[in-house]
Amino acid sequence: MSLPEIRVMTHGDIDFVMRLQELVGWGNTRADAERSLYYEPGGCFIASQNGVDLGIVNSYFYGDVGFIGNLIVSAETRGGGIGAALMKHAIARLTSEGAGTIRLDGVQKAIPLYERLGFKGEYWSLRYNGVAAKAPHHSIEPMVREDLEKVAALDRHFFGLDRAQKLRRVQHDFPELCFKASKGGVLHGFIMAKPGLSNVRVGPWICDPKHSDYAEPLLNALSSKVDGRKLWIGIPELNKASVKIVEAKRFMLMPSSLRMCYGACKKVEDTSGTFGVGAPEKG
Ligand SMILES: CC(C)(COP(=O)(O)OP(=O)(O)OC[C@H]1O[C@@H](n2cnc3c(N)ncnc32)[C@H](O)[C@@H]1OP(=O)(O)O)[C@@H](O)C(=O)NCCC(=O)NCCS
Image 1 (cartoon, rainbow, N blue to C red):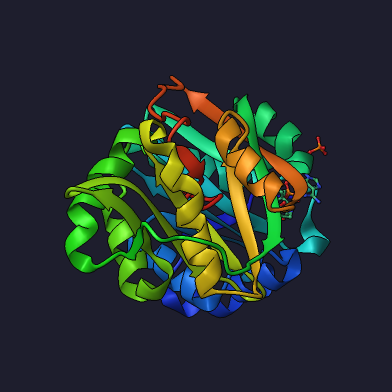
Image 2 (image 1 turned 60 degrees about the vertical axis):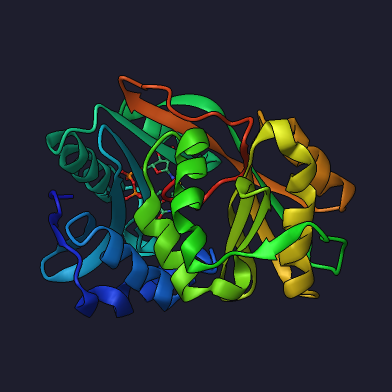
């Protein structure tokens, strides 16, 4: 098969993006696709051949570290190298803009593809599903816009990169799904979530491990808000405290993804404070 043409995605491509999203059933919404274009107007790509659109990939730039996600190729053209071509394009975009390290969360079937491209496994990024239920959360308050500076600083401490733009947008779009834990004006943790097609996707869920007593009430506050809905959470396997919380709530472990890195593999994250990943495609 000849190499595909790859172009920058625009708002006019969202119908195609949604067709591919329906195919994989990750629950991503049209609003998710619009937000990706808002975050990375030049970093989301479409592959096509002879004028027919066949695949997508998104790349996210955080300075010297990048993320890649949402790699999907239409079912009938898989196995012909379009996925690899999209990945190479996303890698080239990120490295040419200065990312010496690139990370992704790879589903198990795609790991050989990523390994061929030079990615190496770092840790399992566990996937849990559960049903939200009312639970105690006395110390937790709704997050407001004025909290965002402190939220972004705490997030940067554990995620290791600046994702203030994304945190602001999620709080703006879904204020009812964002909560904070603070004492004496000091922020110790926060949780955010986004509504998916059939679930509520938790993350980021960040809590200072020195104040880990707040982690569960943060999840409880969100859970109480969306009582009865299905919850999705991605948890770094290294954060045993988070695993313990969701397993005690009888969340189900789903097929997990492998957090992989490419290039210098600069370590920036402190997973002891990462109770829930922000989103599989952007860390
Ligand atoms: C992953 C995907 C984009 C690859 O596209 P492609 O055009 O077939 O990619 P290539 O031809 O360049 O590479 C084929 C590789 O894809 C991977 N792959 C094959 N089937 C797959 C599947 N159902 N899901 C995920 N990856 C798969 C394998 O690693 C395969 O390599 P192998 O034959 O050595 O095992 C495509 O399979 C897909 O859209 N899968 C569903 C969505 C998905 O899982 N995306 C990855 C999320 S991390």
